Length: 154
Image (cartoon, rainbow, N blue to C red):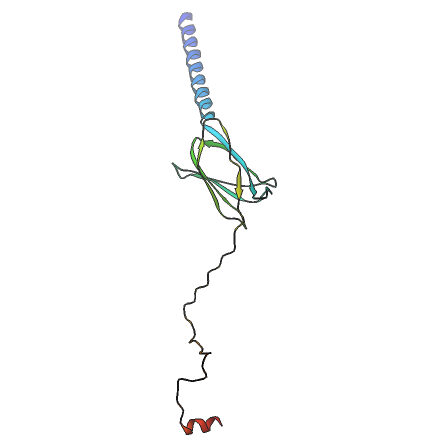
């Protein structure tokens, strides 16, 4: 009887250790399947751009994460799944910028610094209904008037 209890206790401890090892290995491997993507956003004069919206898009899954640059122009995405990404940067007064094919590898700190270009003001005016053109090179009018009509104006 005593021997059965010892065997049962030993089996219980072995199973508990195996379960704990399985859980720890699963958790540890998940830590190495992610990475960090970080960088800074500046203009052409190397001035920081605060408040820029950074979108990190996984090309394979279309999953996006969004961040905003801080007062130093820095951004950071942590615990990002490995894969190929696209970074989209938008800031007031600057052209939208897209960085393609950012390869995020296992447990990396992938740095992507970007420079934004100042947007140029472009406006397009579309005229859909124009007024009749005024003929300025001739004093002739295209209508004839008889005496009765002229007397109304005099």
